[in-house]
Image 1 (cartoon, rainbow, N blue to C red):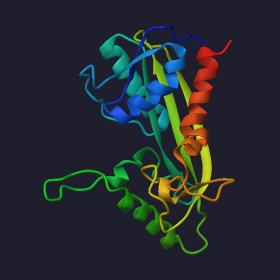
Image 2: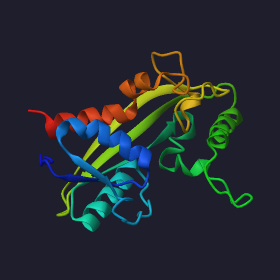
Image 3: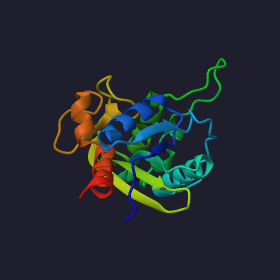
Length: 208
């Protein structure tokens, strides 16, 4: 398996928070991380129907545009009773229409949409769900590698806790009683789907 060297790595995101989080995770391995946003690279349209397709799409676009290795992630919530939805459309479910000139994402609305669909099924609805994360590395010559992380849990209602983001306040990881919205951030990051994917990436890329 091809491995990253001590070179610049493009993080295929325009999100400064995500750049900080990923840079911190990779800092011990001597990689200099720069975001696609900082390089002025365009954001490709996410046309994939799976997390793997979208992560690879973003990583390859950044690698080709910057002529450097690139890392991208795609993640989301999959609810068993909803056939795996929202899945790759996790963020789309939070998109608001233009309202008084302020578009954006409303995660309470998104959580309510999931809960409403479960309630339509009835009290017997299975509330099991999982967070998925796919990390994709792409090189300018087209070679790539993919690492998948999963965290199983169940959904609760109403939302609990104000930590985290997205669907965190309604997701309770298996073996725990707190939602991600209530959990200490360090405890969350230690068990998260992204931590699972990063552990696999580190083991393959930087292991002996």
